[in-house]
Length: 499
Ligand code: NAD
Image (cartoon, rainbow, N blue to C red):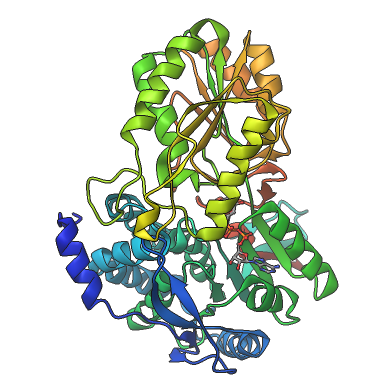
């Protein structure tokens, strides 16, 4: 159970926190080879929490050598699955033991409300690591249905060295969705956290070793995308990049692979989730509450943020009023206050980007019916009000481009066919949401929606047991579920002729 602490108690814990700010290579914290560091700024007040090692290609090289050595030695890859399971379960247990510390690190580093770091991020990390630990000694290989004079084994082998490159919106969870199954499958891993939020990945590294993950199997390289990220993507001895981030950078990783060693690439990229509310939806008050949370949660910095609200025209006016009320409740506040529902934007750049989109929406002719302003500037931090646009046309930039902020675009439709057409009219296809009381409509529309996940009468079909990932330019490859294990291994056929 998360500890219930007051704002003052969280502040006092902050002053006692020890930051792990060096790279983690081959089981040890080390400075960047260049000795360079960068400021880790908290978006709560714009102050530097600590200075963090600024890794570049030399550090990537060191980490890849350590990871390769560990992999080739078989110390982890050849460990019996039930032993690897024990280590991963211990790893999950240690993260859970330090759950308050991890929640605090996430909140300080990227500005999400402490109540959500505590109740969502950290428990989901623990669940992910333990779930893959539990899974790995229950996986069987296959025997092919060959003619009787042969025996063909289809076995899975780990890939080798896996680079994990992740964004800042759920810093440790996005990494865990990848290092959980990658480690379970027997790979060595190098995590490159986002430059905005390196602290939780750096802290978790020593817990991996404490749990029994051998030196060199789990490495963390803080640094910038254009240097550390690119060097990992271009490295000739990295076997796979598991990436979560923007579609733009995802495309770069495809190029890095093509220009280097044709390493495997999996991409979890951007989204522009349509949230379709039909007039026969059950309980419009409850739906409005969920619609508001689905865009304003984490200040809209969520790949599946339900940023396009598609409302059937006959309920439009009443429904928008209800969503506005939810937006008013979610006014930004101090992320360390357990009552706060909405925290900060991650940094100055993201704040300016989102404010730029709000201006774009106005100039495109959409009407701001709630919010639209940057607030709490005196704190030194980065806060934007929940913002709702009405009268949006799906051709507008605010309806087509991923804003990654608390900005909702409202679009009306006449019938289910038109709703599906608008919903699919985007380059993204990560998630779609649908509210209706009619099971036939629900099935038909779910089939027609081009998205990796379709949530019917809920906004969060997010269980670890189901695959998660995108259609179209939202990427390819799936995180979560047993399906994710497949991408961290390769198939070998051993065909034996029987005499
Ligand atoms: P980003 O693409 O800017 O950065 C993601 C990671 O890539 C970071 O670690 C960054 O350092 C690295 N990177 C940046 N430029 C690079 C380059 N030139 N070469 C190599 N690496 C580089 O994304 P962001 O701003 O950190 O996060 C927001 C994006 O992440 C949004 O588009 C969001 O939709 C996406 N996201 C997707 C999912 C999903 O599961 N589909 C989940 C969360 C976030």
